[in-house]
Image 1 (tube, rainbow, N blue to C red):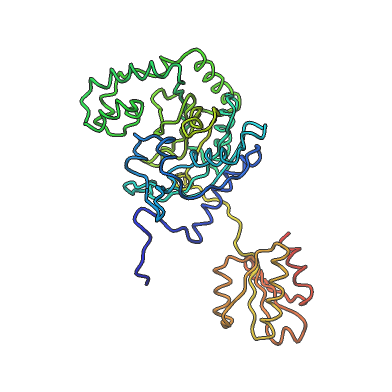
Image 2 (image 1 turned 90 degrees about the vertical axis):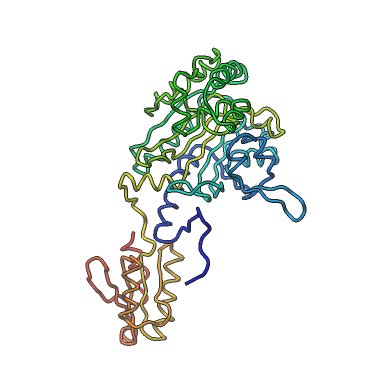
Length: 420
């Protein structure tokens, strides 16, 4: 037994459960790859200032949850707590917005880190798949991303999730709402930290999960009542496009999301089978983020979906994914000559794309057949000295138990034919 364990709030992905996570990632990314989104990968750490500016200096992510450190060279870096700021930074650095083909559509998958109180569905190391459409202000882009996420979840068999939708307005109408909200919040009985938040970013108070705060928010002014005509028209078009695509959603006037960079469209995917950690993903439009981190004006929209929570949602609905067998053929050699020949046949099968494995370690027939059973292989090839002397191997169908002799030189073609 090792004396080391995974750090608190983290987890290891190991077979066979890891196959579910790979399948979830594949299902989420498939609609993106079919819709013009290209893959991007960024470093696991970035400048602290990137997240302070982009995510927001007053957010819990920056003030409490970010893993920040100083390098030997004196640089202040942080493990990435979210993906959008990193992706936009990379796109700007590579001048992708200058290629003349806007929007720049990108998808990514990776690990993110936040120092939070660990609980089921909330980890200090977690996995997300994200998508960003950079450089275009178009309601159809907002609708596209919502529709693609809905498509991904439904392809996994999920049904008990809801899409919450709201508009946060823009730089024209939000300041008026902000002032009205601050006036309301300053009349409440709030702790000192929350009062500071009222001054810095009052919308985040609406996102406070504490019951002592939520029960005081009854009667708070709603942003939808302050939207300018342009934001109202934009939001209505997003709603119409989603509805026309057959995607159901719920209007949630209190939905604000927790990051400072959101404007106009904001949305969240929630699953009611997950308890307090019900959000499985979310996103929205962030038209001012590029300018916040020193770039040009690039209106953009995106989302991130939690792989960990999507797996939990599947479990909550009792959905068993149809995963491909990790091994289709297992070879059991009895003797040195059989080891040499069967290893060659396994190599041939692998080159043809057949998932194949081998009884390593010189185990006897009984132990090797146990390994074959555990592998989940459909077929097992067994060969000993007598078989090879007759120029055959024994092919066993692990489902029916039927065993037949097949010529050594025909076994690869026979398996390829049987497996289709």
